[in-house]
Length: 392
Ligand SMILES: *Cc1c(COP(=O)(O)O)cnc(C)c1O
Image 1 (cartoon, protein in one colour):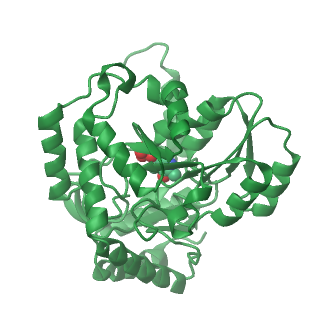
Image 2: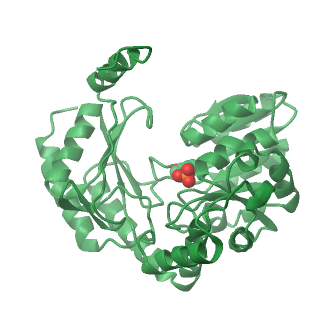
């Protein structure tokens, strides 16, 4: 084995293994879908964010191919240099329309959006207020902004009110996930918007798990609650329910103008390739034309919620197709995932640092491509697996 300055990695990997925190890839032998091939076996896929079942949809694949043929395999440069293709503008217009916002700006991924947009809005003299369960990319973006990062207990409006009232920051930015990625519950957005109004704070909502899923037209949680006009920065991702790749911020035209010049994860990166944009445009068309997908997904969510609640799991607040089956320690979560795999279900154990210590869990995700029979079969398999688990 090679010897040298990277030797410390051996010890680090060993420590991760000992603590049950070492991650590994699981290559799929098939396209994304409700059933996937893993390790040569067909498994019911309960760990994808492809909530509307669009990632494998032939219409999205054809649109991706057509966009690549028409506008190229790559975009060649940053949007600000030579990479601003016609399809970027078309997609931004469609995303602004989805949010009934004046403007939208594409970012290369949700991670890019959250890593770069906060720093364009706040700096050293300012403060960011973030729910403790906000996505890791929001924490990273807050750190990059150099603003003070103030975290409030999950969904705790009283604490947020106190923190905002106590803040002497020049500008204040409240950032929350709309739907929390590992818990499936929704932020108390009406209350948060109220507090932002009262304290003159900007409101940034990450709709990653809500776009395509919630709201009368699938625009997300703010739409579902009639709060779209109260959100200053609507961020959404295109790689989850919309089945392709990329992200965006929707809002006022002057917000877009500022981000064009100031958002480093927009300025210093190559524009999204046409294929991803073509697929997203097709997904938005499916979203509009087939509202029954959201209805079907909603019925599956209700079925799973009832089944897990009957088994004693705390899922009453779940609003999206994400179910936390919290089992405690890493070993229990890993054993449960392995037991489910033997029974034909692909579910991942989610461990720290993705979730807080002691709350390792199965994160069970549904898509519109699943059927009620698959939900019932999963619940039956879960019963068997739980009965065989060592006590917490
Ligand atoms: C997945 C996710 C992101 C990152 O989006 P990508 O497009 O996958 O980079 C951001 N925020 C939340 C809440 C997410 O769940």
